[in-house]
Length: 260
Image 1 (cartoon, rainbow, N blue to C red):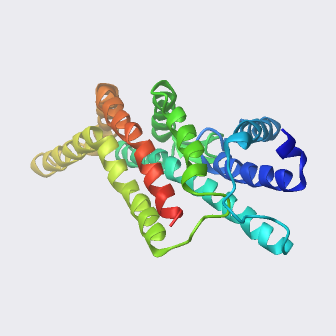
Image 2 (cartoon, one colour):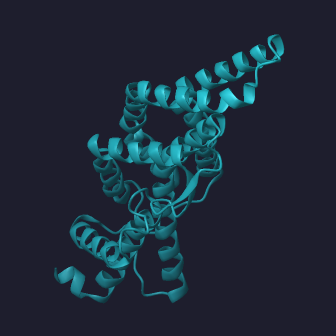
């Protein structure tokens, strides 16, 4: 702890806290407004204190120069933490998008409520899928993978070692583009079933125009949608387990690219 008592040790501690704080600002569950700020700050300080003895500074790295350099290092550390947090959050955004698509297909697009977990209005189906995804995330111990990736990032990317390169932008853009693939794969059983129901309703409306198809299509789609959501939960669990099991490798790949 003598290292922490020095001026350079204090500055190093806050750089570590900046990277951890960036993760807490963007990672799912941790960025929720339900979690008090005092608790978030306490977690950041505790993790920083625990990691401080094992984080080594690169050779020739000191803060005796211009204070602007230290501010740039601080911003880099926050940026790397935010990058890791959003890389985790992209899976949940894809799940929420699948819920939005299913809700629109079921005719529940206007049934929205404020979700404190994500701090914006979401459809009831999106809230259900997002809550279920978070439960799977915790039960599968995927949060340990995220913390392990954060700890390993200090060895792969030393303090102030973030490099903004075209490879990093390309990799993160590719991860953002996968949101749509995740949303379709996460809800494909329900989405396809509701699409078939819509096609059948259209055919019936053309063949037997005397039937008021609008009176029966809405309750039918809601009923079929709820039944299919329940039946597809094992598939949803299997799909998310596959995504979460590869989460650590994806984060480490992103960290390696960020380190240049």
